[in-house]
Image 1 (cartoon, each protein chain N blue to C red):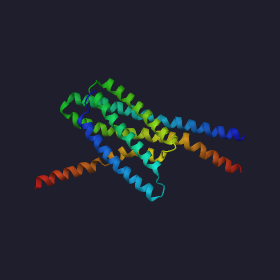
Image 2: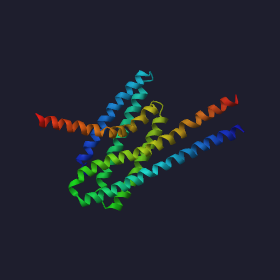
Image 3: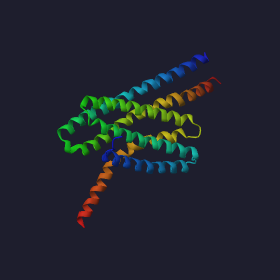
Image 4: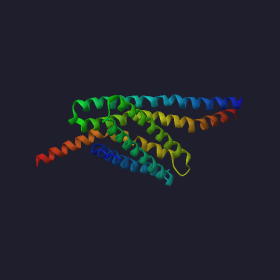
Length: 94
Length: 137
């Protein structure tokens, strides 16, 4: 029974980490669209290249943070959560 | 190798500066709470360096992407984002797995560029005030 409980905890943590990383898809698509539109803008007004690049650089960095949050959550679920949860389980049994 | 655009270099220098300032503040906080040791310093240096390199790589990718057509630019950016995300994942795993590096001190600096971007309106305001004062003389 204990092995089953530990297995469920480990499996749930791994599944949670995988689900959290779905958030990593968004920034990629968002940055891709932003750069595509910036290309269009620079094509129309080449003299604005510097301003467009700066704004886009900052926008992309902000968008990327979302992916980073997901990454940190996934890492915590893989490396930190299983140990803590198994310890809580053991304490409860004792 | 293509030359790095001046805009990308300028913004990377700004991000690097803020990252260094925030890293010093973080070290001070670790010192105050009594959890500072050499692992915190190593983790901070590692995490900060990765955060700056990540921003520089993003800038270089954008510099290359804006010279391509829309579809190619979007694909290049998505590929770059995936690869940089993997780099960050490997960074986090290394920082947590290696015993002589504090995982928390390595992960926190990865968010410093976001804070630096939040401070951009302040930087712009200071620059505008500086120009006004210069013209006023």
